[in-house]
Length: 132
Image (cartoon, rainbow, N blue to C red; front, top):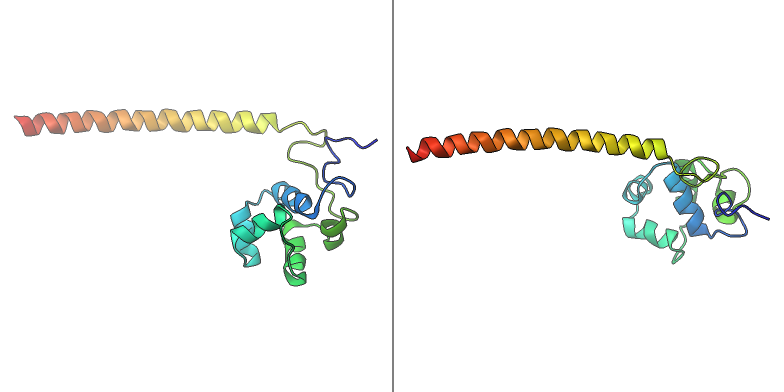
């Protein structure tokens, strides 16, 4: 029986759009970035990922190269290109990476708060000087 945590993109369960989205996410490329690299609009990439349309052969070939998967894998889910869902091979999210991102964000927010406080103090001093 397939493991749903790791086989969501396999040939029996995933669509072409699922594989495109999965490979794009595994490559850490945004939809707008993929669109730019392929010379198409973001809406076009979205329609491929939502299985509303399919790319022409030349775009399919370019996409396989950009995403580092085979054309056959994109079309059928078989062959080279088995990408794991975001997270590790067991399907567990990258918790350490998320925690690191959160810590970085907190540090950035603390620095921004400090800068905002300094600007507020300068503005209050300037307002006091103008009023005198």
